[in-house]
Length: 143
Image (cartoon, rainbow, N blue to C red; front, side, top):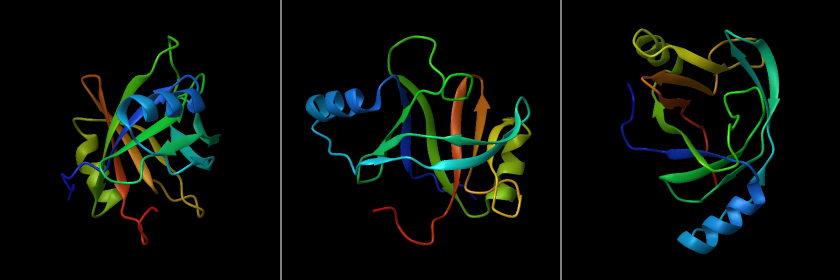
């Protein structure tokens, strides 16, 4: 079941540090730092691959999540400006909940687990241009 409390809003930006500085100044938000995970993912267009991301998050939900643009990926930008990318929600069972939603909202990209299990960590779904992310619940809170 989808937890309807919004966890975060994802925004793709051309330059992570510049966006952090600008939004920090304009909105008064603070950042938890820059995270640089390499995540195994799968999508129908490119298959299995690893993607290195650069992400910044505000500390309190609903968080702002800034993701530095990556060409030829779901995180690409067509213009040099910030772009609302997705809304993210936690789910009780990522596999079952993603499968249920995938009928009307196909999975665009999904996280791949260490054993090759799919989906793990997250799925992105798109419905009429709106992208949303379903997230596995974390064992420990993000701090």
